[in-house]
Image (cartoon, rainbow, N blue to C red; front, side):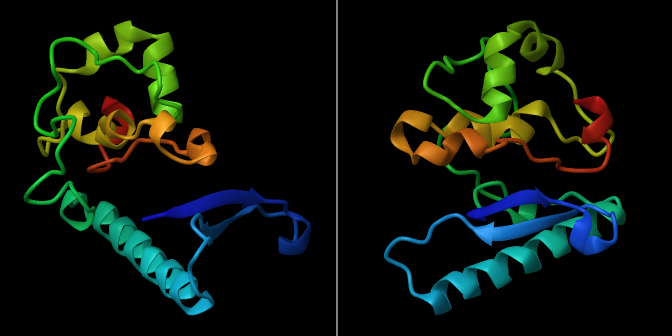
Length: 153
């Protein structure tokens, strides 16, 4: 989606917090392209949230997680061993690197709709901080394929 989200202070919103969503890539892009990307990303986020509210999977909406996954980490089943995450800087990669037993414990789990850990952590596994921007550390690296992912994983 190439979006960045940050929680805002509550002063302007009468004490309530909100999220500000912006584009993360601004070099060599026109204002129109940036705004179009932001609008498209927000549209996709709303569509995903509506599907999750209906109990539907969202993978078909995500690039590389629909019918054909992007090359890299498998999306149907976790490998027996956790790949090296030495150069991965996403939040998910840091947690998995610091607690490898978590991967071992969850890698065989699935939700009632069949969503597995592999599909949820694929963005973190495929994103190599050494090959991307310095802001890669702000990247969470997780997706929830259905509502049950929040409890299962």
